[in-house]
Image (cartoon, rainbow, N blue to C red):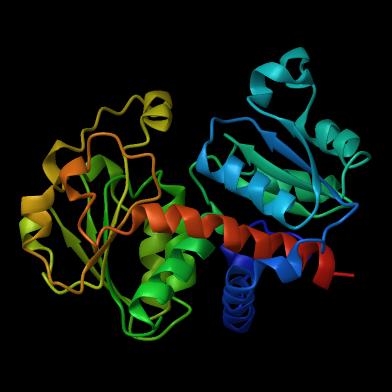
Length: 304
């Protein structure tokens, strides 16, 4: 692939190939240490980030690339002077071999790719999508469950603005026998676009209003935070109080149920759960570096 803009562009065979490459990199990282030697990667982050920014940066460095970056580009770039995103891309591509972009605009990655002559990697566009997070989530699920077909997944929290959920659903539904159980407050329910996607791809979809009604044998609980930074723009007030997961609550689920979260966690998940071996969100975050190494490798090495 030349760009990673949306999970819509990813076919099942390409996805499986990337997961296999991720395993190769993770199991033999030394082999890949100079594959991006003499390459320069630019990171343009117009929104705050810890895991995505640092794991992409670590991925680039571990592949031998150099980094140039703008953190908090809304305030620390010419965007403050009114420069358009398109013009910023036109300028930065003259300095770099690839651009990793995070932006509050839903269509930012699509806008960037229209003017780009180098690979653009979408590191999060508004509330729409976060494709590399979807890839690392799927890689983590496959690592622990040893399969991607016939999975029963509970998605909890902000399903309206949770771009990680949106990307994950697009990837999960490439596989057979997917069953989705959705729990959120009414204001943050999964948008019709994704309900229709689940129906089109023959995934079973069930809405819930409390944790107690979720099936206790789900393979994965995927918890998310309330995207308060996006709710403020919509004038919506919502709380995670009705679906907080703590150790007592988690123990009502199967011994084979794993708990994931894209992080950061705020009020929706209690720290008393951290030592439970089924709580895999820190491992999930660490997998991000290897998956992003695979993405960079595919964009810059296999796309020659």
